[in-house]
Length: 176
Image 1 (cartoon, rainbow, N blue to C red):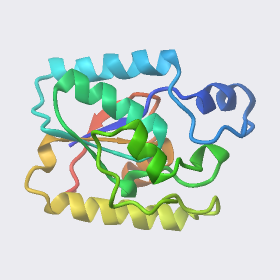
Image 2: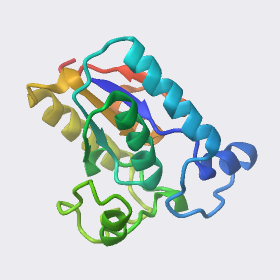
Image 3: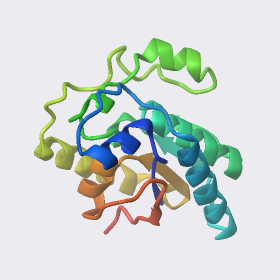
Image 4: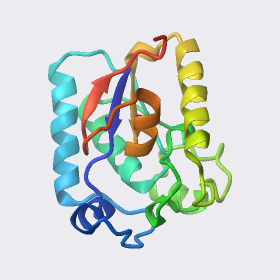
């Protein structure tokens, strides 16, 4: 399995400069973020790792990242809400399922509630539980070695114990 953090978002630009939540709801990737993701996807392609599908968080920045990765690797995308961000900032307020379905008509969102993101008071323990649940599910998949997962800094930190930079990718073994 390859874990990929989404590319630079509008939130990341402001927050890294000020340390203050700029109040951007479900931000998009920046042009820099799109380029970061394309470079990451091309690196994964050059490594000749067999990727058969991409799982992605339902946040816009992750969906945009998954779209670029899937385009480069020529694989389908599935939406997986377990890998969403730690709901803590305004950027972690999502976009309603019906709007996502219109924006990405080729993807399936019918397994999500209309308002699928939690309140912005998700605890660290909640995210650890979600990460553990994802790890257990992924370990049971026969094709886990051929999956790329697009997620977020907070979730990936709880899943792996390490901080990922924008568009950073790394192998992950859910069995360990």
